[in-house]
Image (cartoon, rainbow, N blue to C red; front, side, top):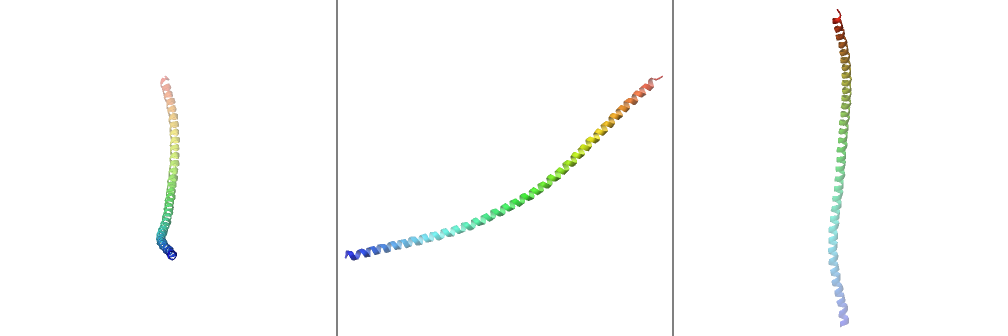
Length: 124
């Protein structure tokens, strides 16, 4: 009788172990399905974030290009104004020098004329 019961016990234990393995398999299958769903959501989120990041980089680059162009225009305008002011300044300096030369010439002529007038007054 022990010989007949022992295989039945082994069979019952194997069946119980098989049931436990099936339950564990179903749990693992469910966990795997959830993790796959989560992984797919994360991948979709990552793709979305990468696209958003790329779009923002393009936007920033476009703004920087526009700002650079604006600044280049301002620099060109200021450079032109600076050159015009430098030329006007130089012309003013040249005019001033010319006027000073005239004043010096007239001062010398005045002094000469005054000397001649003094000389004429002294002549009897």
